[in-house]
Image (cartoon, rainbow, N blue to C red; front, side, top):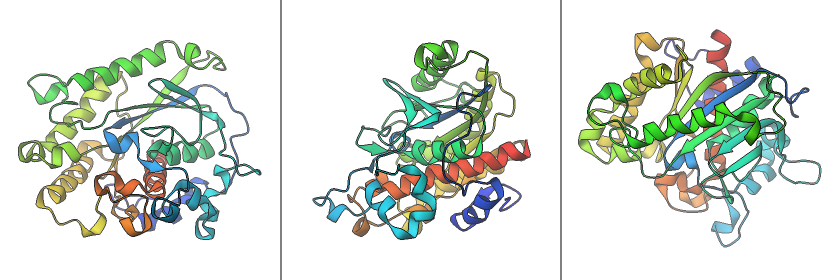
Length: 321
């Protein structure tokens, strides 16, 4: 569903989009391994790494906000039933592979910053896996505490290219150059790089100069990634850095979120870049495992919804394309 002509996605629209792209059913794709492999890159800083706690730990606010508590919540049953098997174990998807530095395999819980957490990859991977017939590969590349203005600085922004921009491309090209070495079940019949998801912003929103340059850096980043990966108009989804939800009042934070939305609104990106609003996904510390607002209070439901929202926006772009 097109929420506006600029492809902004709100939480209210996601229920409608669920019907549109056929994601309401549970279970995995009928033909795992089907080629060509559909490849998505997920990149950013610590909130792409992911701090959503998996285990229901009574010592952490009575277990509130954990992934285990989310799947036990009757209100979420319609959206989470496919995440666990009949015995209550986390499903390992054969039709969605993930590569995240030294961790790789079928998508399941535990591919966050630590094996005890999730990030946006969890909701994203499950959603695209439900929607696509072909085998999916997620290449996740994220490091904590990294700015777009400096660490991920794209070539077109001038000055020294960010070292993590270079590393990101090296990792992507390295994985794609020998997929079978990482995933022996790969049939070798080709792949298609079909989308890029971005969730980042903290290190730019705490620096005024970085903040002021964010929109232009984001635009340059999208252009340069497409050029350097050789995929013109590669669908790109920007997940808002909305860590304090609608309660956020800091001028730099608000400015950076506007810059993220404005980058997606550029005329040149119409129909191939989406901005996903995330403020509705914020959960306060009273119902979360921690009070770390900059890490979404470690709330697994939040990270799941961010990834799920990114996937639905991505699928809408792919359908249009």
